[in-house]
Length: 490
Image (cartoon, rainbow, N blue to C red; front, side):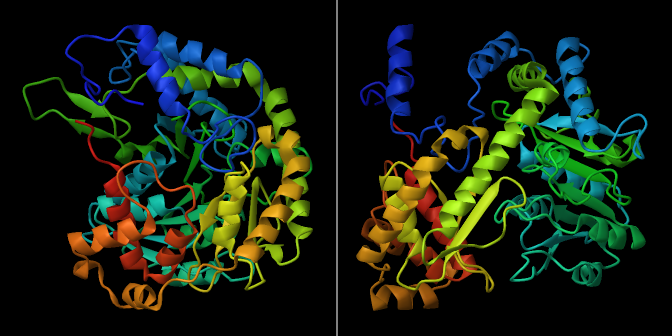
């Protein structure tokens, strides 16, 4: 724990060994980042020695600043190498239909998506109200980009069975003010691949850019295709695809945070840059959002790719594919559970058909057994679900997961669904975000076990309340609840 008497800035410095012990003590409360029991947030290949290599590479370049590539050409060389590797993997480069692909390394998928939207917006300075068309299954970072950049977001529904948008609906959503159409390969929530070729075609017909969010799948789908999986076209081999994002800190297994944003050519990328010379300091030019950038993550990603190589990634993809199949079989074996979508990539998404089996309680029961999954609330006719991000490190655990899932399902049935007090349900259904007062928020948080300190181990009641709330109220409640957790230590 942090020393409450001195906090992060003591009067006298603390010995290095003690500081590291404090950090290790704090880390003891975290979810496990290794071992194949955490199905979200982290990506573990289970490769011995890879962490140590990445950490050493990170340390070599931690103080290198990506602000000025002329001062630190080592970082520029590594960044260009990462962009080239991603471009070749995703259908670009010499000898392809997209020989002039260029790109930038960003801090993560959200930054990549924001920059893709910015480039599309700034390429159309004639528009006063630019818009983007995004399937509702598209990552929330598109909505964040629209919010930050003051653009309109036009959502396209997805089929409740296929979980994909219809190209005709995408075409119908395009307006004269539309600057970008998005598709996912795959969607994060359900792991299904949008009809990219058809979506790119309708975008191209309208003269609009098409961005493929392959942050999640861009580094796995090409290897799965090489292994014989029926992966549909989704990359620069598809006419009309103008940009693609792929996260290296996901299935390239690099440490966080490293993503690559690719554009089909330099002209498409140009509006992504920000330059400013109208001040007395140095002339600023940034290809990405950040100015100062540590070279640590880029060097760690470079070392990871160099060490694993194509054969390593192909092997890891095969292991992960088999793990996905095993987890899907485990879901099929439990009465009352079913796959929301047949796995197409590295996601297993399950839901419940049995009203006596509360998915949020199931998630808590799995957590109690050491399995950490990601609950997803019901949305627009789509049922609540549980998301499993599957990595290579999960493979040795697959045989254990089936019995654990069956036990957790039995325990969830025995416990019964969460039942909120009628007055709380009525409140959730009638409140508006504007009606929330500090006292009301504090009372709700206290009743749910939220407040200063870690979130409670069991979150079924919280998730049930959030699901009962309309979307705008749900967003406000989440902001307030997380705000209660983020308070300074004095």
